[in-house]
Length: 338
Image 1 (cartoon, one colour):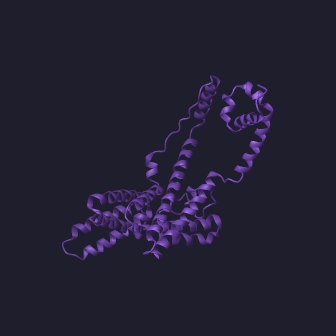
Image 2 (tube, one colour):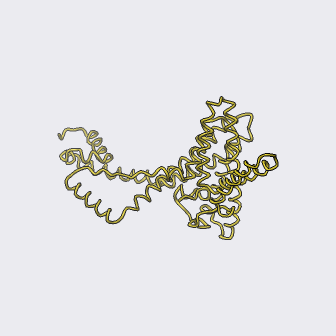
Image 3 (cartoon, rainbow, N blue to C red):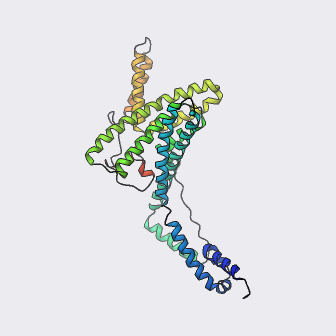
């Protein structure tokens, strides 16, 4: 045993130091044989790990960097698509849609993880004590402890505007090229970056916050107005690609739009404005009184969910956001379903 070459001893010591499972599975007698080299290599491996991981940002900060980069790429790609519309438009369109999908995949993932964390923190102290006792008994009996994580309800995910925007992004990426589909996404990205800069990167005075919120409300309604026009785009694709092939995108978009109409104040206000325009146009035509009556009832139904025609923001959200370290909390002014 003592004639084992030194490089093999060094290699075994590296395995014992770097792979924790080998420390449990390996025979203790082998550990004694490589004791000196194991202690030297373990110290060097810890030092190397300290150097490597000290330059890696935390997960939340890394997600935040990806969130900022994807929003910026969305804006740049949309502007480049409009500028080089006839030359390299398809390349920039693909670049923009990839950025949009990445953005809302990140925030949807962050929303689910934060929601799951809040659900786990809601466990009562008695349940924690009981679980601690059970784990202690299992450890004494040398049994494997399996942690069961309760899943996030589907209703919580579907009520998030992040999920709605992710669905729209996937539809944009899988349907025909059309610049109108990118406009609301670019506006959302612009608002997110501006509010991030004003609240996190370069905090502004509280007196400027109402002005920012006022401009933000208008941009949200304009973006929602573009969303109202997209069903016509998907309907035209149905006739262009064959009704059977294009109807799926139209149906999926209508489902997502219905979810947004139920959860988004800006979408409701934009749709209410559209109903008013329809009512005004139809009222000028003869024999259209039943249609006008239906539109008035729909308008009253939408008004019941709004705050007298103004965006009804959550009162628990401060007017001036505090500096955050999470991706989901940094989608500052678009998402309100905390």
